[in-house]
Length: 335
Image (cartoon, rainbow, N blue to C red; front, side, top):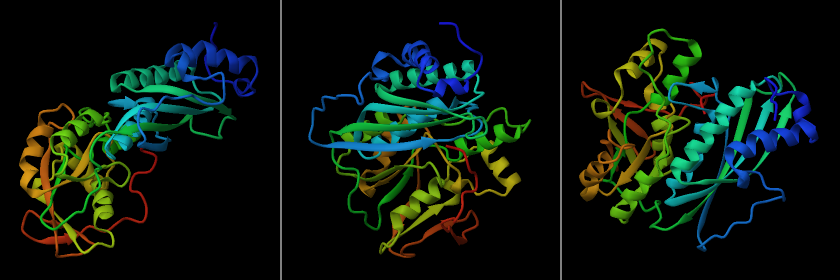
C-alpha cells in the first residue's frame, strides 16, 4: 500500500482510506488480532477473578528520552493491573489521531506499542481508530484498557503502624525528563524517562512475600506524594518519610530546584511504592534490587500513629514539614 506522508481527514470517514490505514498500517504492525472484524474480542479467561482497568494518554511531546506515547500507553496499563496483584494478559487500543500527524511518526508509535507489548507478554486484542480535524487534538491520544488475572494474594491488606514504605527506585525521572524535553533544556542530556512495565518485578515480590505486602501503587500522576496521601487519607495513621533517604538523581534535583518543583509530586512511569510488614522489609528491598526494574529500591519511610491522615517529611537537619495534597498538577500533560 502506498502511504501518504500524514494523516488526512479522509482517514476518519470509515471508507477506503480508513480501511487502508487499518489493513496496511495498524494490523500490519500490531498484528491481525489487534483489530477485530467483529465488534469485540472473544477471550478465554482461565479464572473467576480478573482485574480490569483503563487509562488515557495525552502526553506532550509524544516522543521523549526513554520512550514515546505508545510505550507509555502499554506500560501504564500493564502497571495498573500489576499493582493490584494481577498478571496482565490483554489490552485494547483506541487511537484518536489529529489530521496532520506524520504517518512515519504514527508507524513508530505503533511499532513501539507492539514491541513493548511483546516484551511484557501481553496481547493487543481489539481497538478503534478515529481521526479528528486539525487543531481538535494534540497529534495523537491513546486509550488502553487492560485485563489481567489474579493469581496471588490481594495487594490490599490492613496497614498498621510500624509498616515500612519502600520505593522501587529513583523518583521524578519521568516527569522531569518530559519537562526538560518540552522546554528544550540544553543541560538535560542525561535525563531519561523511567517508563517501564513492572509486572514481573511485582509478581516476583508478591509470590515470595505474599503475606508481607500490604499495598502497592505505581507513583504516576501526583508522584510519591499522591500515593502516600492515598494510604493515609481518613486513617488513624500517618506516613513519615526521610529526606536523606529519598532516591533522587542529581539531574532531577537540579531541575526541580531550578523550577521550584518538589520531586515528591513529580510523576513516575516505572516506579512503585510498597507498604510492607516491617519484619520482611529488608528482604523485600534485596529482592527488588535483584531485578532490572527495582535495582534502586530502598526504604523511604514508615507508617506511624502520629500525624494521622498526614504525610510528613523529616528533613536532613532534623526538622519536619507537612507534604500537602496539591489541588492542581505541577506538570500537566506528562502521561
